[in-house]
Image 1: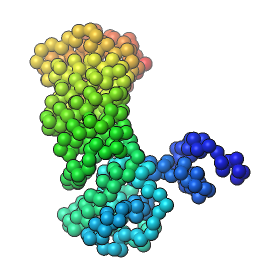
Image 2: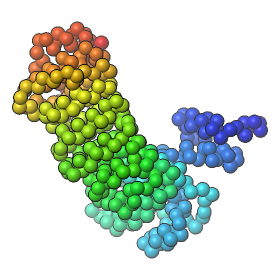
Image 3: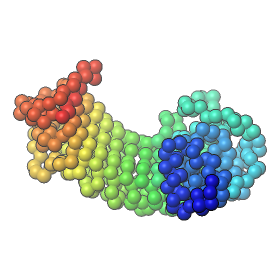
Length: 388
């Protein structure tokens, strides 16, 4: 390796390492040993999403806990045997490079680390998830201790999180209460672009988050149930500068108000997936304002329409919409909503998937056949796919 290669500009090194990482992380692991400049360029890439990409959860948790301040280490030793904690030190605080924080994977990694204390570092993390049983309470309490120290440490150390995933398996969601101990105004939260939320979230989480971030790009929302949460969530969405993707699953709360908040992102929102929700006229009107949608999916949902739905222009004029999926939708009341949506959107579509039990009128059927002549039926799923 010549001197010119070793002394490449930092930005060039970073781009090279990022390209290598996208092929395989093994390609850049040895680069950190060339010199300090190479290490500083490679380590942030390797540590961006350690809980997703790790092959050794034991070594990962051990390394992060080694970086803890002395008072945090002392707090751990009051609850755990010393056999769990390494006395070695590291050159860097690796937590500052973490950009993706998935709560459930952190939990599982801690659980695996506790089940395999040092020096058994060669054991690999299994690919299957770790499930809690009724006989695990003592061990789970230890997980809570480590979790309650490690999660705030990552928040405090990270130079800026991009992905925050708060989803959990049933039975683990009470760990989300730990977020209440974290200052939501923390600097690391200002940079979040991807947010995954379960039905149970810390009190006032959405309301506090709206005060610190305006950079959300992608939202994955799993059945928000409480009206207060939905109100705060709607306000959080309205405060953002450019959301591009939203997936909303199984909400029974103020769905129309939440859908109306999506209109604030009409200039940038290109993909919307709605699963297991109840749509009424106001909600359909709100969807009809999303003029830049390219992909709309409504699945396993119901419409409850007590009067004919005939949206006036410019509602449902979507020149960029190419894919429309209406799958397993139960229509209560008037079918006019489905006819109106199809009538206005079909002329620009490249793909339409609809449930076979829809009763499409003749005019709409002719428009579909003219625009999307290719037809494929899936009898097992009772759906029809129309494509150009």
